[in-house]
Amino acid sequence: MHSLRFTNETSSNGVVECDFMVGDVPGVLWSPASGREQAPLVLMGHGGGMHKKTPAQASRAREAVTQWGYNVAAIDAPGHGERPRTADDEQARLDLRRALTDGDNERFKSVSIRFAISLAERAVPEWQATLDALQELPEIGVEAPIGYGGGISLGTAIGVPLTATDSRISAAIFGGGFFVYDEQLEAARRITVPIQFLLPWDDEHVDRQSGLTLFDAFASQHKTLHANPGDHRTIHWLDLDTQFLPRHLGRVATSPA
Image 1 (cartoon, rainbow, N blue to C red):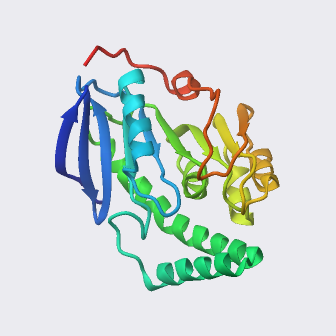
Image 2: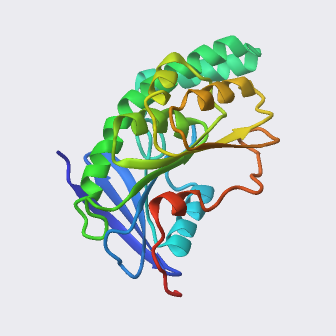
């Protein structure tokens, strides 16, 4: 079992941002400066080709800290951010670029699915080890409610099997923008926690039916779907249910920074 090792800490506007390592996996934890114990923890998975601290993800994390008093953690997916790529990772990226250049959507789909399965197989145990380590921190502990806020694309490709595997996660936000496949559907059928599902309606590569099929597969009796026009990389989400996580994880009273 790997322990968590903090490597850097900064603080601004009531939010403490701590970089950490769990084994060789780099991550970041955003927490309230008040240091409240056992506040809910949200795990955030990033999109494909992105990393744990993209501006959009960091902004969402800080909002969850300041508005709801949450802790928020993110790690780099295998071959993303600060992490080295394997030869297979490099080949998959090359194949994806070639498929896009050639306009071969079937090839793009098959490579995307194989790559997603490979990333999820590696990332799920890493997320579980990270969660084990985070629960050792007094500000989190083993009693804090845990949610997954990975959103769309790769965040869902990893988050679905993670949520299906780890019973500590009690609510999750997923989304479309990624091809659906048998392993993902099998995992979705084992998920019974509340789900919020975000669907880009006009993704240029992924047919919206893939997202609808995945949404339908979730076994949860409390699941909602929110669709907006646009591609998953450029979409502007409007009128989201921003109270989804506070409703299911609770809310911690916060004080002004």
